[in-house]
Length: 423
Image (cartoon, rainbow, N blue to C red; front, side):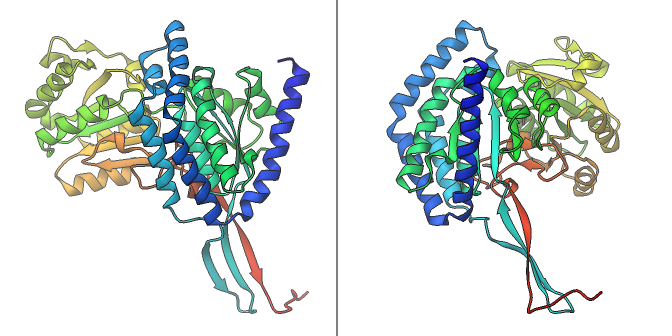
């Protein structure tokens, strides 16, 4: 696609999105929920077609020798498509945030002031590999009254188009604009630059979801606000008062349930007071499960299979069956390690000492902190949000899972009875 054609296509997407966003901002909950319900039904009905499209993407991924983490994110099966459909239905069950009154008060002069939730407007969501983002992002934007322009990665182009068709079918059936959820029709990388740099007049917020390279590019080039995170360098700290069986279960799940997600644990921190009781069993469990362990001197001493960790390992988001292990001098040292090396994403403490847990939970400044639970719960669906666009490590506007409420802003509605401001 030459530059003139790209300009025409992208400008048309933006113009249609602005028109659709005005309609969605006034749309009833019944209409939005009907669109989502029909889209979920179409996902189930179109299962063979979606799997066929995904097979094309998987074949191309193998030819390009994509990593195991990327191919895992890309792969669809009947269970994952059912999960997408169920995710849409769970969003239907959520309250409609638009128009809700967040606060209300009356001033001494009689003015009644309300803070009312409103949509953000038009979102651009740029993502790689995961075709389920097409369904999740489209549904969350629709429920929150936002129009969205989706730019899927070339890896998932066939799958994303098949899923997008189901969303469009739902919109049409509900009498809403089919352009409320649009998919950029080209995989040309120049389309990403265009979204970021040339459409500030139509796009209100950009949400990147993908690898560090993509997110760095979006944050560097975008001329509109960005919601996102660079790394998911997540930690599990096992305290001296941790139940060993629980610690093993949580660590194995946090690291290995799905290694390619941003909530996977990348570093295990073990209290020095628990070295004699917990360190060897935890490392043995990880190695037995097929996980490579890179550790400090104490970790290497308990098992010859542990490779020496480098300074870079403490910073690394592996997205693979690899974990770094370090012994630390208690909870304060664990918090200090996380503050220095972490990415402010998700951290967990395993302990039966509530005072220690509260110290960790209050001291660690990450988007999500957990006590006696796996970091793999860093997921909007697990939080009861139905789905999520991603996990934000920002402190401005949205933090943690970005669901329906996080895709809204607010305005002030002021009602008076003829009041004027005195000079």
